[in-house]
Length: 309
Image 1 (cartoon, one colour):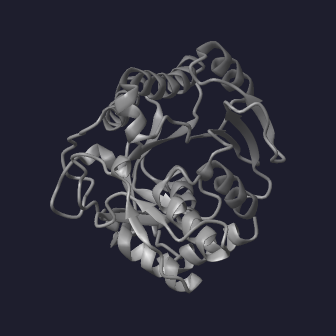
Image 2 (cartoon, one colour; image 1 turned 60 degrees about the vertical axis):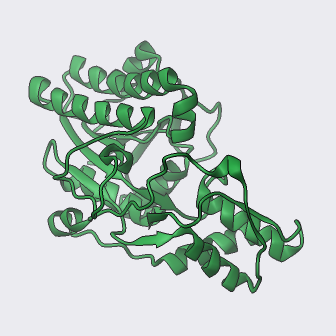
């Protein structure tokens, strides 16, 4: 019998890749997508829906009775969370609780994937392990920690089946250039093609981050939703840190250019954590996951995608 998936934020970066992954892994899977966008160009059942609308969410879940909910929709910008802390918290928490409470009220056996963030950890001078305490430092991460705590509460008190992630930075072709790495790649591709002058705008490029190819991320999410024990939490990360400066160098080398790098003060975050590296040993050991895409391959694919746009 084919599985039924409900995916929120399906028009987003990860949502599209998850659909593609399911098409290969479970060709008979049924997919119901939810997103705030009016339309969806994928060949799936789709409804434009605001996740703050509890009544409409309940109608969908009660009727569709999904086996799995992949909850990807979120207000995920740290910078925006400082500008709109109330909206960030209310939107992220209400969206999750509306989904979980509908599953509870309808007595469904639906398994929920609650996606969190490495931002939950706060500042540590060591690779981040799931056993570390959580010390959120911005409104977005506070919302994500709250979502995780509510997930565990719904498991413990209401018997729901929820598995969780603390996801680190992920990148790949088709990612919105509002994020740092696709912004870099787009700028460099435009310089190489002559579409823009040789002037690359950056923030602090000496920070170290842990980047995972989005195609490896959806593989991790699939393994977690299918095989992880109830109430478990996994880091989704490469386990390797890289300076943003090195990513610029690798991309520029592929394009055979020497960019003129200019620091834009508006892109420099105050009190930015200088190094964020995750430990993925739990995900590897318990679920047999391992990343397939090296950083160089991801960058190459991002460059090739932008060249053909």
